[in-house]
Image (cartoon, rainbow, N blue to C red; front, top):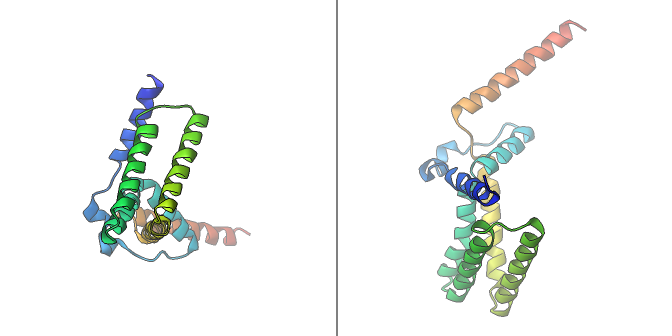
Length: 169
């Protein structure tokens, strides 16, 4: 299998790994974790499992903010940057160093264009909103009941093993 075929398969598997939007936005699944350990585990698992959903939302927020403020130049810059990103990184296989140089160049050109057109603040706000929404959702979105049951069972096993250690000391 060629490198280009493998990369395309990796991207297609990444983009096919999406939970349905009605499940993703199901508010009955938003619950506070029991403690900080479960909070970080949940956020890490959700960021990995729902990466496509979070990416879609993170790309949509700048577009929506640009449309709400009727700043069509901002929307055009973001749209062109997204298309260039897809053309440079998703559809073409390039070595790592070249990929990093292209990414830095694309980011620099985009930021300069946003600054020159007076849209940098809108971009920074939209990225902040997208990052905040992603972090809040990923840490509050509870996994399926089966996974929750496994965590409860794991806690019970840990509790029982602690009791047994106390008995055999």
